Length: 289
Image (cartoon, rainbow, N blue to C red; front, side, top):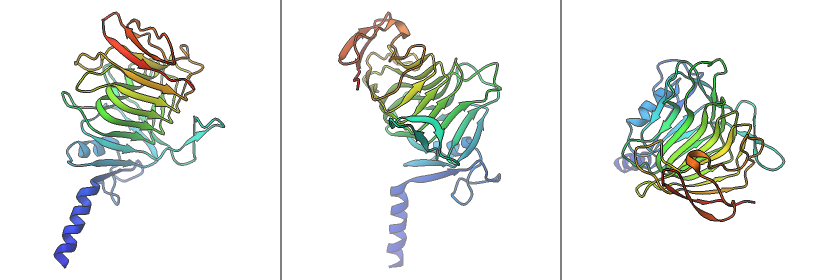
């Protein structure tokens, strides 16, 4: 009977996967367990990248200063504790419930080619990625070189980005997706070059994104639909984007913009085939409530 119980316990551990814990208030020398969490996010990501099976990184409330790019190269769930406050319409504001904010803050020295957090692996497609409950930001004292973006996701199926805040500077993109499919929901974007930029995919990694229930205001572009796959070496040619139930007001370009590479949207209520100057076709499905 004892051997059976041991085997059952092992099976349950394999089924539930690996949990890694990060807490900004922890002491040094942690091993990523609940009792002894890592103090910085990079240590948690390094362990996750070397692990097998399903992996979830649980990030406690606090400020995480990131001075160098962090790269996730596997399927993962990255979960903070940030709880966004909604307005009367049910859309998120930049306010949060007290004590819940998990803030990832870019600081230090950066190069233009780097994002704060990148999810993807060259030549491979990741099958499941969840990013939720996080607040991405840029240190206001960064006045020279800024990160290119806050979060970039490349070649991912079943992407979920939700319940998060993206705030930065006027030359930084909040969320960039390349050849990714999934959903971006209930998130707040502000003070950015583009709140979110969604780029094309290719047959091996299609781009099919639903962007709903978000507020993206106070930036150059609230939402940018990109007619190329410039962020990856593969030639992307098609993008399906379902955009509904968002607040995209008070941006320099307030509606979903296709300005990159000459795209011009003809309608927000039907499927259009749009040709860019580089002869890459995007199919855009935009629904308006």
